[in-house]
Amino acid sequence: MFVIGELINGMYSNIALALKDHNKKIVQTCALEQIASGADALDICCGPASQNPLIDMPWLVETVQEVTDKPLCLDSSNPKVIQEGLKAAKNKTIINSTTADAEKLEILIPLAKKYKSKLIGITISAQGIPQNKDQRLELAATILTQAGEQGFPIKDLYLDPIVMPINVAQNQIQDILAALLEFKLISQPSPKTIIGLSNISQGSKVRSLINRAFLTMAVASGLDSAILDPKDKELMDALITAELVLNKNIYCDSYLEAYRKK
Amino acid sequence: MFVIGELINGMYSNIALALKDHNKKIVQTCALEQIASGADALDICCGPASQNPLIDMPWLVETVQEVTDKPLCLDSSNPKVIQEGLKAAKNKTIINSTTADAEKLEILIPLAKKYKSKLIGITISAQGIPQNKDQRLELAATILTQAGEQGFPIKDLYLDPIVMPINVAQNQIQDILAALLEFKLISQPSPKTIIGLSNISQGSKVRSLINRAFLTMAVASGLDSAILDPKDKELMDALITAELVLNKNIYCDSYLEAYRKK
Image 1 (tube, chains in turn purple, blue):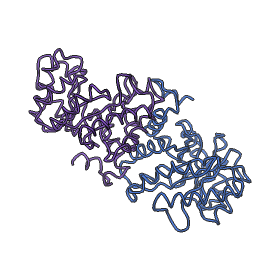
Image 2: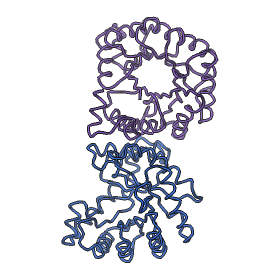
Image 3: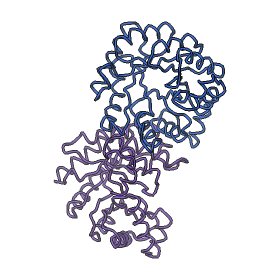
Image 4: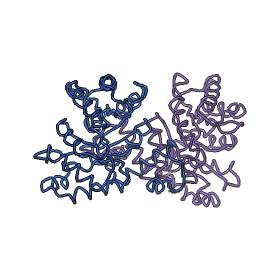
């Protein structure tokens, strides 16, 4: 599982504060803590706190790069903000994200190719959020087809079925799990799959427990990557154990420590 | 999920002690604690501590029946011990278990019919433990065919794919999960599925975490029933949350409390 830490995001008060004064220390501490907890990459999102994301995104990228060479997941719905991040990046990058809309695909696929970036394709469109598995598959096929036609390497494409909060769309969760399995089957080579995990428990009271249950099931559905809070130790324990149960890491009594050391 | 409490078993020291002096209090406390923790039924097993299971099994049944009318899961590899339990039972019963061997099926299916008991069919035979999913399906088909031919109601048959400890058969766990899904497809009406959960972590150091991950995945594979430790609160929380994620109980912020109250 490729774990992308979610905590460098202007929607969190510490990062909002850091953006205000361009305080490097806060951002770098957040980066290093996530990596120490098991993050393989770091999401970078200016969020609603940013007055000027075209400046803040490259500043965040440069700030984080000073302390780590882990891949950076450039998170914005504005392609121009992503482009500023890509320009500043020396580390490997993942674009987060394109939708299935033509105007997004026409900008972001060439951008991903130009900067040799991976790309997250989220199965939504201007028509809104899909209501079932088939609509997710249809949007996934649109993204895959466009990526294929533009010569983007499919192994570098991460499809996101868009996780809905359980308190508003409980009946869609099984469809989302099924979509994860089926995304892998609609092209050869297979695209990768990814989720923004915390969405599942947005607005719920018992967040970590719901996150753990859903992540465990998603791992059983072949999930390749998740954007999550790596500092939630119980969540990381559940993830490591889910992969153990599925024989992705060899069993030993101290498998949790062994995984964390590697 | 139909939860069968596993704790009335002579392999545990408190029950071994109770069997020695026929101490009702110990057994009844164990029964009531499991029910208070969410058990829908109770496994009853004399275990290796019993000098005379033909006497101890009906004693355990009568002792438990004094404090609850929950179904009893009569657990022995010896059909004569099960028969003594059935004779003593006023509560509903589940026979735990028959193998796929003809000599077991020929005794235990008629016994289940005679006493209107449910029946667990475990996919092992005198040839030993199956090594993969196909061998499990073959043994499941043998049990199903015999049950059908003898006019046993298939909806009362629980198929157990036999859970192996992860520290000895890690590569079989995915096959076991797949078998759970496929057992439901080999007959119409479908048989039910069941696992003896704790086997997965037998001999492991981090038991509850492994139990939780495997149970969560098994629930996603349509599992109907599990024999487990209901006093493991984290395990029960994981179970309730897994069913919530799969839309089997309606979401509310206090879903854990709501489930426990019902």
